[in-house]
Length: 263
Length: 267
Image (cartoon, rainbow over all chains, first blue to last red; front, side, top):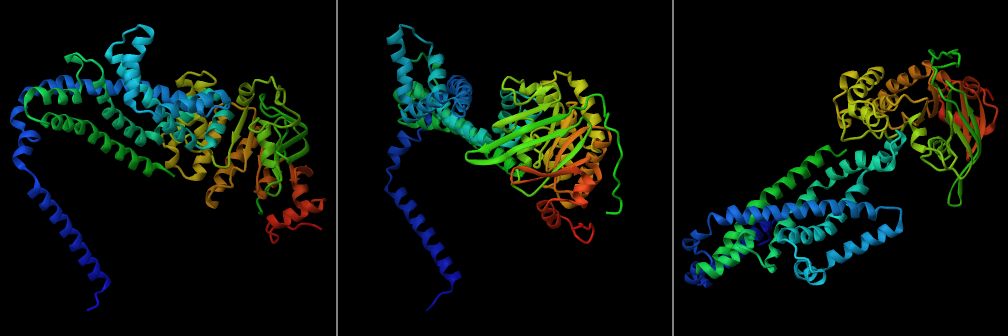
């Protein structure tokens, strides 16, 4: 019996839902719930993580991310301007930097500044400084490309109008172009902050004192000390979502706002 | 166009009107020569309209006057400045030269008032309160004083262009350049912009206007310059060039642009 297109679509939907239900059921049946409850959802034993995971871990993650972002934003802006410069040397330096730091794992940068720099120069940086510099330098490479796109998206007529009012090139940049570029890149920039939040966990490669722990370090520490299996990591992960989901919503809000005002 | 009146104004103008003197100006993009030796004099307080087909180089000529385009050869004097001198203080010169663009180019992140104050405070170093006063006066002058707090995207094209004129006027320019100021406008808003420009001309501002509005050119311009292929083909008193052109190319162009039932072109 031939089916109409609408019937076919409905049957197809039932089949897809059926496959999903069967897959979930199979997963539930195949799982050893005793082990999982003891090792992943063992919330009874995580009490000792509180309140420090919030007062120290969450706070430090926010601080490290913020510091990294500030360095990344300033460095990224500088690199973006260099990349758009008419002076070839600046463009080469910026391109080299961006390709290098986007191309290597952020973990290596943390190790380089955490262990390499002290070895090479005999200076021991404070952990906060290492995070700020490592995170910031990696972030700068990504943010630079985002900002460059934003700067280029500002119409040429804006610079011409500013220059024709007697503004020097730098003034036109600072007063007219950069503020508009930032509005354009606000959504992707928010996404950069989300990436940074997660990358701040790479600090675990450094030797930390308890007051320097951030979320992931708290999670890892909990694994060995609480006897609740991986549950502490689950808790740490939940706190990352507490930071990143609002940021995601913020980015979406910026996006819809800029879509509305775009002409 | 029954209401066309040719104003007889003397060209003493306000004290601060600058003249323009262009000699043998050449400009090429690669091997494409856009301006092939242009000479043009604009007296202080004079209104000159540049007309001609698209690609004739009239916009490029206008943009050379405030160095948005760098000419290859020739000289341009604006007020007391030699624009073509490589050591000229471009920014200082541009303060004297207001520019109005086809696409308005208002700053979208600033409201109408701030559009008119930003260069006053950052370039002329006026205090915010003084700049506000000047800006408000110029917005009133273009009939938009009541919309000072609107942002560009809340204004119609014609209103945006009038704000752009107010923005340029807020710098107290001695010369105004208009690059097809009404070409991007809805027909019903063209009149408002032209009437602002007409008033400006009456006040004695030196104006160099690239336009396709022949009615405006006839009525307001002292002289009309017809350009084609990078050269000045014909120039003279506006009424004369438009009504009785002598050159074949001018006749051809005007015939295409003007509605022949309204203005007769003598052969």
